Length: 190
Image (tube, rainbow, N blue to C red; front, side, top):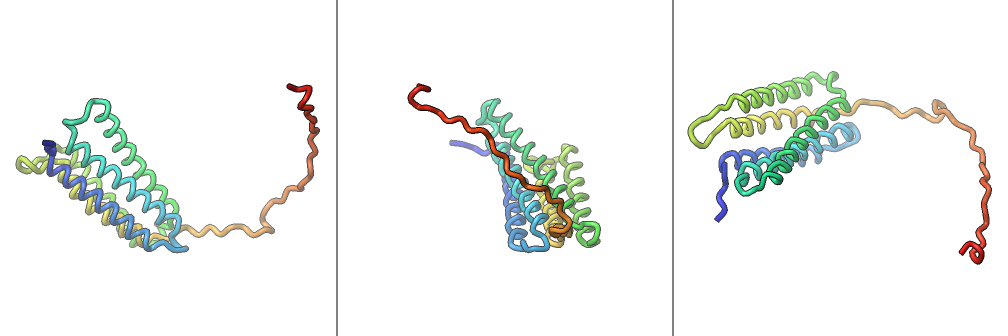
């Protein structure tokens, strides 16, 4: 019978992944012409965050059953997913006019602050009893961080970069180029 190695950590990682998917789904329902780029980037960030958390649940729950190569590959996938999440969040903030909306900025900075508190607790080695450790505390805190990011993302609007009209474009003259064509005699070329 298979037993879960770290049941609380597995459960909190699963909850973190589920919350991230839910925030991504809810944000995707608000897509419109004013937030198309930034919201899609945020949705992708919530998706990669969910992938990292769900892989983390698998890692923590079933680590004793993996060989060293599988364990390393799974951990690497978690790290790459977390890196992708950070990059997508940065891209989403760049695509939006964050500085023009102080409320979005407050939500965003709150999300960053809560996430940093979670990271400090993660690295502190915190333990509350036998079953609740620093990983579990980080996961619970990060759910709050994701909620704050969701609130920021739901208010963000894309930068306005109007496309230039035809008069502002550089037009290059078109000329036809004829290339010599060699005819192939199929009987003699064989």
